[in-house]
Length: 134
Image (cartoon, rainbow, N blue to C red; front, top):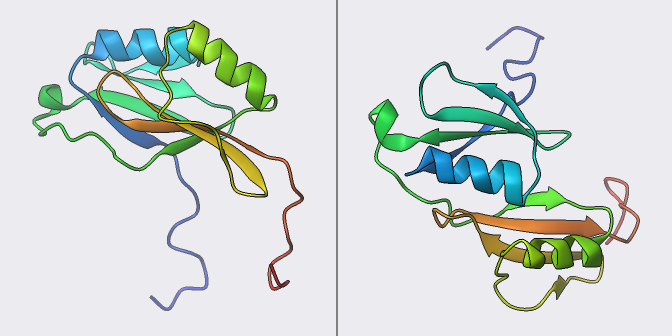
């Protein structure tokens, strides 16, 4: 491309596959507490808001697609990591192992009802400026 304007200017949403949209609605809306902002008409799909990224959940077979769970986590930001983990455990979420402390952030991994990998995340150390040594 020769244009000075960028081709890609943002991300409108990410999509998570499901086999059962009603169960996914219960999980993303109820367990995670994300607001449902839009249903895709009468089709089994809808959009959940996280604050800075929309997660569209769509029932694969209703759109002629084969279901595949995502095995790399969508990292969901939380302000109070310990409280978020405890609340999700109370709501039936089973975490995969202990909290991962990388030295700059905490993460805890879990699956949605379809096996899509998710995580809660909180960065507690300052973000380094680009180009500075780690």
